[in-house]
Image 1 (cartoon, rainbow, N blue to C red):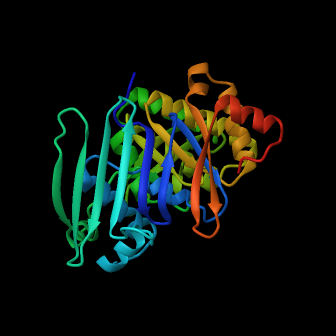
Image 2: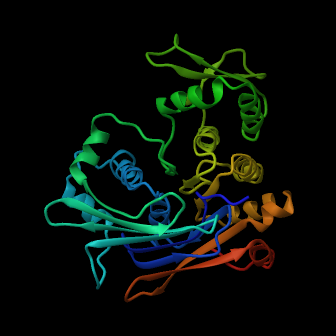
Length: 343
């Protein structure tokens, strides 16, 4: 079934390091690889694109201010961060999205000297009119500084435990019996003897999640566990939050031991399938690529056919032009088996 939130193709111009950049022939499960500083994280940020420009800008500001820790960011720096330094039209960022339901949308974010953003938008979308609107950078940034939270579809590699996880779990898992049962089953990928999860308000100033295990008498807070447990916990919650949409995960294998990597990948893939999430993840690791392939080999053919590895390569050192090379499952399966380099 076609999904009008999943991308088949995506283009961006003048965004961060990219003068022009295109992703084509996308699947539901996309693993992005490439050298350091080739732009993998920037691609994930661009893929947060939303047909509602207010939501997209909020995502970008949230990642820049809350996740990259640019506190008190002014409008000038925000603009410099978002736009590249191209040879042509440096004050306009262009986005073009082609969706899984054969609709498309073209949008441009124009930066003006007075600090305003001029947003232009047109496309082939049902019940979605062409429009041209203004939005203030200051207003958008202040909405975050004033404590507004977003369900941003971006999981950075360095984000560990926070009390936000408890809130997400409470809203999306705790009160739903079937979801909680599946959630516990999925967590067994990392914690094989997990029994239960409960929210406690008595062990700390803020509510925390207590983990019950067969091997331990005491129920310990989730925050006392390692990066791998917390990483999988967060990803599984994000799958629920972004059901039917897209989710971007930077360096997905960070904190996951190689012995658990294949089961980890299989759990993530099946969760994305069950929640109809289009997944975009990055890695630097050959082991992660290999386990991605091995996990897919244990899934149904329709899942394999919807999987891609996307290799980013700087094709011209002078212009720093980056091109994406997309490999379907049978192509990257053979490459991994033959020991060919995909990173």
